[in-house]
Amino acid sequence: MDKPKRPILKSKRSFRRRLPPIQSGDRIDYRNISLISRFISEQGKILSRRVNKLTLKQQRLITSAIKQARILSSLPFLNNEKQFERTESTAQTIGLRTRNK
Image 1 (cartoon, one colour):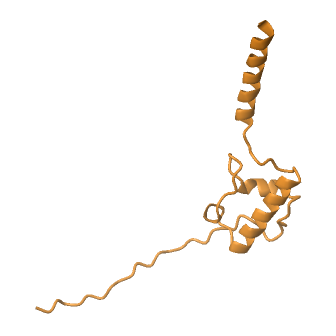
Image 2 (image 1 turned 90 degrees about the horizontal axis):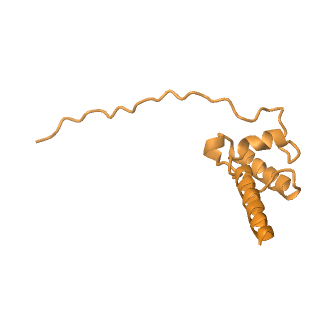
Image 3 (image 1 turned 90 degrees about the vertical axis):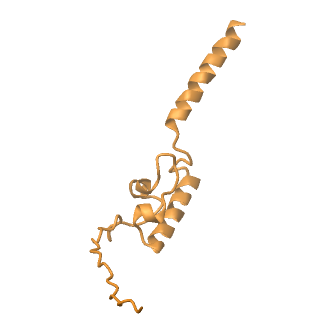
């Protein structure tokens, strides 16, 4: 009745060490727009730590730098150029309609 016990073999995964997205020479600062903009999505959202492959400390610094840059108007809160063009064109057509009356 006793089942033969098999040793449980854990699969050893080979983890490839990824290069960090922030180099040691890069300063995480609100003035470094080229660095900060890499961690913002197309919609203007701050990307998560898993997506960025950052450490917790680096993610905190990036988040605070992005927020500071937004407040100081170095970065936009929203990155919606297409939406702006659409609203601009609708405003022109509305303006034309009111002028014709």
